[in-house]
Length: 285
Image (tube, rainbow, N blue to C red):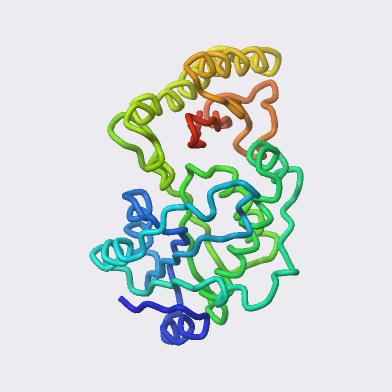
């Protein structure tokens, strides 16, 4: 496995590659990341994984400084999984000057849900993804980038950016990897205490119940949705969680469902804090 720290080193490593398959990460890799890499392998002539903790997408007071950094273990895992190139830039390599040009996603998508609770997050995320795409795919006829569905809104923002900028990249959505009890795998899961880890499965269970209630509502869903969401949020809060949202939305645009929206058109999404750890998850309906 080649390890590149600068854009120049990365482009040199990929000089004979025409169809890179790319997995962007912030490191602290788990089975979900490695699943993305495995799915990427048949889609390109070289697999590229990036590890970069992007300061631009952290709000003041969030966990940028304490975000788990496990570079040696990550390298070993990627090498064992057959990654061809690891791009691990230092902050000064990716941002050699203040990043005054930024990607501003469509506020009709980016200001909802995660964007409402983490203002500026999607601007920081989209900016670094664009920089990474330019580093990996510049001069290539085509490529593929892998994104997990756990970060559902992020996936939609990236797809919109690729579409509107006509980037030569196929964005592949990969199913969420889960522990045996259903908890979505996340680098932040390591923040959970033993008791919190046992409790953490309640988020996906609440989303599952909300999704079932939404389907049962049928044509009445637009009218009944607020009450269903309020009940789901209250039940999670009663267990000691601090929910930001539990909601049912349209997969197409994350707006509230309309009459006639049913199975195959909806997604239940949730974000809640358990102790000091904020967890997100979703279930397509």
